[in-house]
Length: 130
Image 1 (tube, helix red, strand yellow):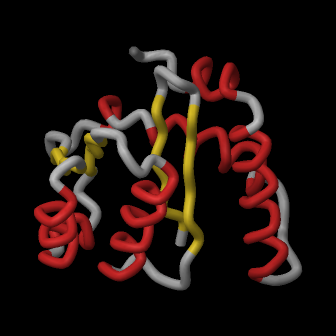
Image 2 (spheres, rainbow, N blue to C red; image 1 turned 60 degrees about the vertical axis):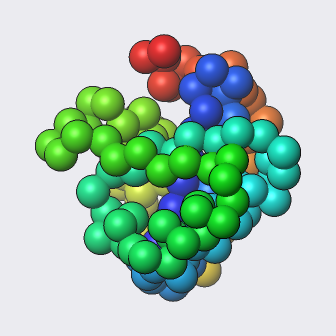
């Protein structure tokens, strides 16, 4: 499972690989973002993922005070800029390709995300809706 987030203005994108789409994985991603930006005010737009409304996320954000969770409208994938990153990843990684094992797929995901992380202009061009 990939959890991802993107700042289209700065061209920054972040990800976390986990074994499941659990509440714990979502919380680990929020903590990862907070660690990366320790003093910043952060607004995270959430799609309708099942773990996104979890109480542990709400409790974490209530304690954080500088992190805010805002839900995107239902059935509005065009408002979710992360969908543009997912689309790029699918084309780059999985189209017409068969992986020998889950680790090979995870390595391809990591490598592709690292490519984006080193190319903020590419992230901006992929998410150019700002």
